[in-house]
Length: 281
Ligand code: TA6
Image (cartoon, rainbow, N blue to C red):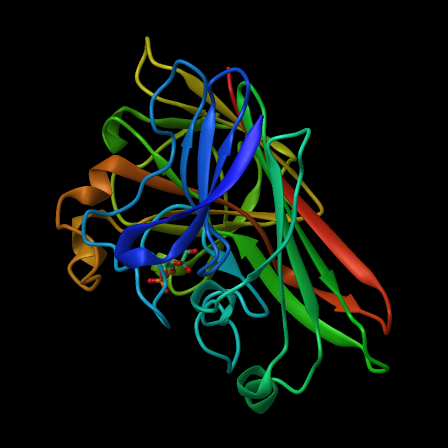
């Protein structure tokens, strides 16, 4: 087990986590952004666009962006907040586990947008067959604040038309492609065949992504996050995404652990945590 600091794309610092079994992950200090996860003896499980930009003030297209304190455009703040475009600090790298914790807090620029001190940590732990992210938000100040958040995981798939998501049958969702109409899911295996952008409300803690028969299945477990977002831009919305190749929508699906519909209200001096654990079956 070890973790080491290395120079990533454009010289940006990244932590490389290596588990004794051979599994491996990479996380950039820029955005606390996990950009790679390869379980032992397996292939890359996260999608990162060929056109992703690795530069200051820009969100990396793919991997696992951190969304806080606002999910998407659900309020007046910048889309998905700003943690994904900031430099985080390394707080701790375990010497006995393949695990690192990064941290970030308010600064003059965040206070100008959102007048709340905060302390946010992201812990990333790698096992033989799993990758676990835990986001912890602390309110160090005397006033409560409310936020929405997500771990915006881009999962790599062989072809989007061969992929099923299990676990959402009977769950209500906000359909953002259809102007926010609320629907109920009626598929025990959800298959994507057009632009999809949905917030599943009070989603179950366990979902499963099934790639085409014969390839591995991925269990998606969440705790603390109440909702689940499923997003694929298809060829239609991909045209408006300059840092993604036109055909790359075929190679990804976002299944995000999110807390959106009921924002977290964080009282003074309290903290909140949410986890997403991805396990190859
Ligand atoms: O989580 C889904 C979503 O909110 C979509 O609406 C889509 O815009 C996506 O995030 C990516 O957002 P980005 O700002 O990274 O282009």
